[in-house]
Length: 194
Image 1: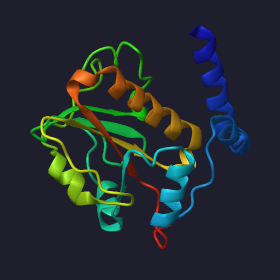
Image 2: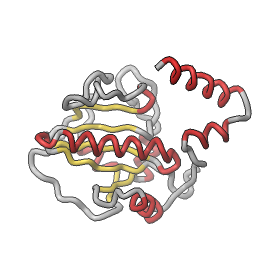
Image 3: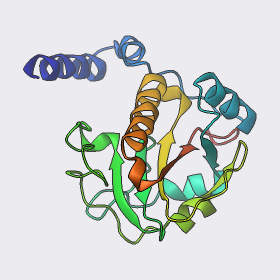
Image 4: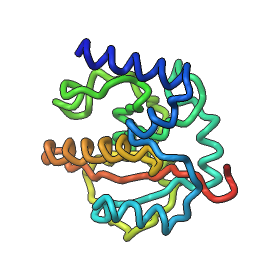
């Protein structure tokens, strides 16, 4: 643990204080940001093997608004592109996590809903999420009594996005009694937004 923290600290200093940012991005699997079309996002998702999951994408108008929303009570404004939200069958947000909150541990994911995370913004509802994005793959009919786990991802975060999606798929599979439907929500930029 200490070795990992020391390595992370050294890489952070190198990335911030030197011109090693491109090397650091490569080591972390981060690519250059680029605007993508819906078909490019869908192709990327298929390459990752995610076509069996419901695929959605944040609408361009909603994307601009998300950048100015408060993430959680007490947190500064701004959209966190790598995150997951868990909604109850009634559409209430019951768990929320973003990569900026720190490491997601096995302890956090040992129970349902995930625990040990910062408290979620309980005013957010599933209807808001569904209103802010559109499907980019085959539609999946909702089932009664299921939880929805929306996993936000972006292609240019490569490895981090893939790891979060795979971890949440495994989490849903480990809790079959909860009937968790994983919905992937892409948040890549649109052409003309950069």
